[in-house]
Image (cartoon, rainbow, N blue to C red; front, top):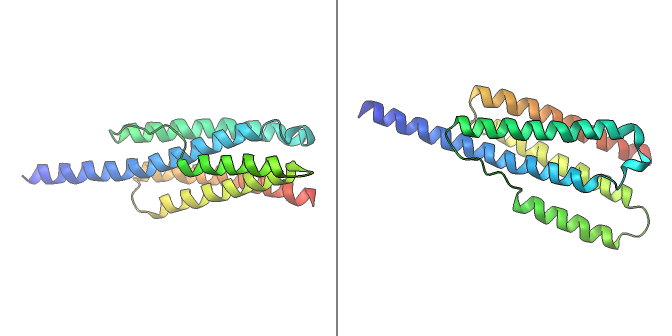
Length: 162
């Protein structure tokens, strides 16, 4: 009975952690999908930033794989899809951009900044949840740092345009 109780608690903790990590996986997939939609819309006018964008996009794929590995380490199945909220946001962006007259670059950049800010908030909430092991916490914290760097990069592009 003693070991069964602790085994059950251990499994529940793994499931809680995997749930948090799956949420982050959805957000990371949203970022990858969002970056794919941005590609070609603004990079022609920001050739000096294109390599940084490629690095962020590549890093997002690494982050995705790290999250999948952490979820599998917990003995759970990764939910490797985008989120409903992210899909709704991308649809809204497409609709909004179809009615935007003039410069869609600024609108696109603002939408990227909005998405990155939402990712920052979600990652911070995951860190603050207390549901991550030390290993996961270290990796998620590193991911958050990369997302913040991306956020500032895009925010600076907007400020530069003004």
